[in-house]
Amino acid sequence: MVNAHKGWNTWMPGLSGALWLCCVSFNACASESIRACAANLEYPPYLFIQHDTQGGSLVGLTIDTLQASLKRVGKPPAKIEKLPWLRCLKLVEVGDIDVALNVPTAQIDPKPYRISEPYAVVHSVYIASRINSPHGLKIRTVEDLKKYRICGLLGIRYDSYGIDTGTVDAGSGNYLSLINKLNAGHCDLFLEKREIMDGLQARSQELRTAFNSSSLVQTPLPEDSPLGLHFAVSRRIQDSEALLEQINAGIAILKRTGQLNKWMPSYLKQK
Image 1: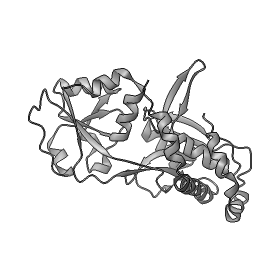
Image 2: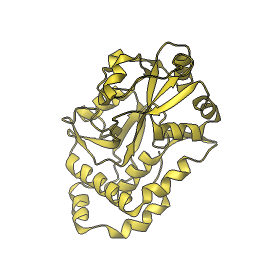
Image 3: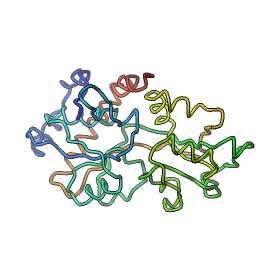
């Protein structure tokens, strides 16, 4: 679990009277922590495990945003766990967990959830192999993706691309395995977010070398609309609407003060 950066305190005094009322109605000053879950994948700079002498802890822009929004209204840090993505969403849907982290725009049915404003925006790219596709792939629209064999990581969904996730070879447990599968010709491409690839390369020399190999080519996805990253609050928990308002208020101030941009560089330093 990760506490918010000290920089958050610089805008604490601006708390509005309306938000204080929201805090009281939601019992926001109580000691009970909200429960949150995220996909059990590494998504730097947004959410990943930072290893240290004590073992490791979840860090990233997602964590900073949520914890700081809670701290602003007197709530203790959220208890966050990584789970298989579909299980995480189901537990939030039924109210056993309060919030799902990093829900992409339009990826899931919003009916069981209250979806926050996006705290970050990401852009899609596709990665192909020059070994097997020396002349490149003919992808002019998102619809053209369906002409090719797509591989991916376990637990990733592709609904937002209009692709049936069941048609994707999603058997890889890590990016090196995924790249090897691509270069071996078992698929034609894989999809990722440009910002996440930047974060992965900053964290790992091995991945930096792999992604920059002359055998790979990375191309922006045509017609791609940037995807927002959201928090999904369960409709089954008590005062879920108030919690959503608190998160949205935090996101709005973080954007207005530029705090998100101030935090980002610390997660993109190369190791």
